Image 1 (cartoon, rainbow, N blue to C red):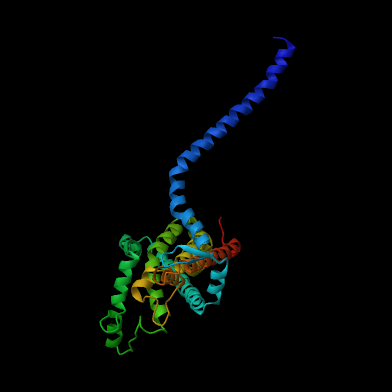
Image 2 (image 1 turned 120 degrees about the horizontal axis):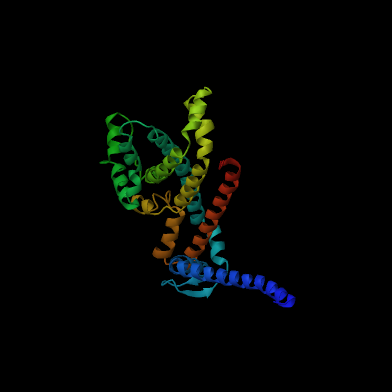
Length: 313
């Protein structure tokens, strides 16, 4: 082989390798798209298309069938922000979220710490604590409606038996939202408990042993070992709880129907009323976009705070 041919071969080898790598990368990309195609089709049908259609409808006035009749731009959004009903439902939703999220996390964390103890029979209590996860929101709401019944409910029966005043848990505007929050807390405890228990079981026991040798009692171990190492899990469940609280609907519909006097008319129930009862689909679509933006903002704030408070190592 001459020197010229050898030089040409040396130049062609890298080009051939680049061509092979390019074809391999293209083949991998095509294979990946084919594997993801079923999921992408499902997401396109049930997530992307409804989201785009909602944003489109929010700029139109609609008829009773939900069909667009006239382009009105941002008028639906302006009507939302100037509506007393929408502002009151937004305030009730934020207040409801503030009541549900911290209480759920505190109760679930306490139960997870108790269930993390290595004692005989603890598996039974873990099952009991996680049981709300297996119950649908509709079934849970029906049970709690019986508990809150003003004359036959077990809660007022117990209060009356010990000489305490009874309440209209679902009929008094002052405490109806609290009653719905109690139901929602119970519904969310199962999932939150399981996630926190998994996080606790991932904490190395050597750290507790070292802390005990250094003289740390259980309270100091909780503060300086458990909570810092559990902070990523706490951050995750806080984000999930905020989103779920803002989207609460089933228990509202069954327990109070948005009443009394609009005290429990949370924003998702307000959207449902406007879309399917009042047939104002365009107006309800604008409310949906506002709710989406609210969730995005609150989640962004949580992530901003989480960057400073969460310890991943």
